[in-house]
Length: 274
Ligand SMILES: Cc1ncc(COP(=O)(O)O)c(C=O)c1O
Image (cartoon, rainbow, N blue to C red):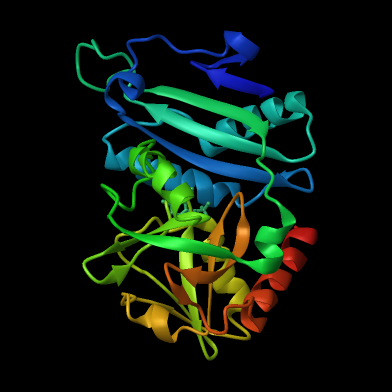
């Protein structure tokens, strides 16, 4: 994959973009990250992403020694050099060298500009099936690099012909491994408030939906999937993906609903003018 990276304050390309093997991110999975993207030559809601990145860093007692302006300036250098139509930007902060004299006294900041993944159009037009799995992420408000559970479930996901996993925990619906999850009932958009990552896309949708819908951020009971009219998931890379089935139950009539289409349209209008 074509990528340009910023590692220990240096811009590195191709196979030169690497970190030492003693990094705590590698050795102990002690690292946080965030993922932003470009629309129309601008980093989308970058201050929201950086703010969440700082909260994630604080959650692991890691200090980020760069201002927002320094991050954005260097990010734009990477993105310009990458020179692709749809660029994504990964921000990473690791625990740094495993043998540091004081734990975490040399955190390692990394940025990687890369081509965004593409998703087939049928995902957005026809909607997808999710499979539930009983799990809650460690430190749910922190975006750590630990996606082990999601990767471990790949073979099961394939066997069940599910597009993705929906984490449920003790009777509550949480989120997907990389996306927030909403149900629609009447004109209400309902999504989990606690024990999930607060997505930037989720927040943008709250704003865009305000005129047409009531947004409820609260616990979502698993039984509510049975009575939901529609459902969808949201993330930076996928925007809004309609969900038409969860396990064996159809959501609503099992087709992409009008409310989800409205959200997709509002979001498209918003990014067109961003
Ligand atoms: C666990 C989890 N939930 C939700 C999201 C969606 O967040 P955003 O809309 O900021 O991409 C992500 C994104 O990576 C995630 O990893």
